Length: 113
Image (cartoon, rainbow, N blue to C red; front, side, top):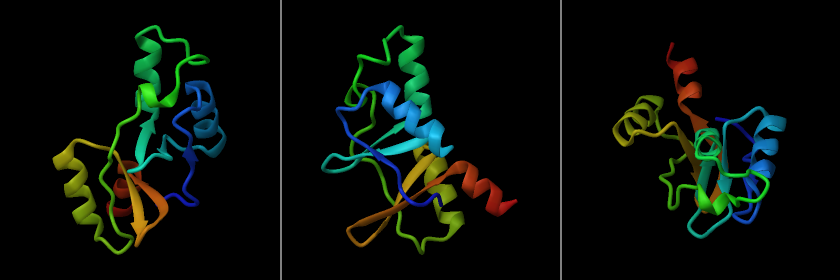
């Protein structure tokens, strides 16, 4: 998983989210909402393809709300099955009430190959 967990405000612009992703070499951010949401590079690309101005559109316009999470001790095979079954590529890792990292399909593939 990627640590530390990078987050973004729902009121941040897509440009701010993209800059955080680029600077940290990641492709998803947890959005600080209750319950937490997620915004991915795919969401940013889709917004750009639809002609939205990334300097004026906020993250909350494109984020996925109420995302699935996994505990840090879940087996990779279970995470892979979960991602495949749900059609997702990122899962925040939660230890109790603390968000501690993000696991991506790239992380899973690298470990299982």
